[in-house]
Length: 193
Ligand code: GAR
Image 1 (cartoon, rainbow, N blue to C red):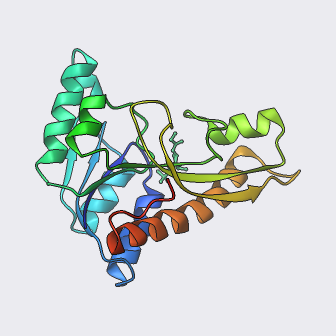
Image 2 (image 1 turned 120 degrees about the vertical axis):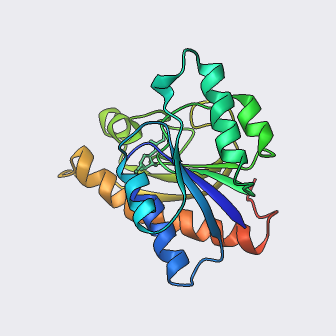
């Protein structure tokens, strides 16, 4: 199974995928890693791991449709079976999703459909829920919407800050992403949805 991974930042979830592939625990080929801006650590660490990288800089395009088209072409060049949004903080167009047969996987640090968006951890804490978690799902063109494949709960402690909670969620999220990719590699039809 060939994957292209999209990142906007640190790429620590991506690193878990890279590590699992290198350890021979995950039978996927990371064809490329792409970002929506220059200078991400996610791209830097991928290049260090010998993975092809590309940037389709959102700010370099006059309008979103042009950027979407350029992103679609950049990803399509690697002919992925699955595209993974791993902390990719941009909404893509329905045309992008269609170009990859709807196989656009996203991870999110909350139990969707609760707390979508860029601040899922902060929003869960602000609401005062006692349990949050992470979600791996097939993404559509909405904000963290689409059929859920896997979820895992994480309890919120009184002493948590957004950073400590997000880090605990990410520990779970990394495993869930790797195990979901492994299940999809073994069976492309795998999906709880
Ligand atoms: C992850 O927790 C991911 O779920 C979240 O960004 C983080 C990226 O971390 N994505 C979203 O909030 C999407 N709405 P990473 O760059 O260290 O992998």
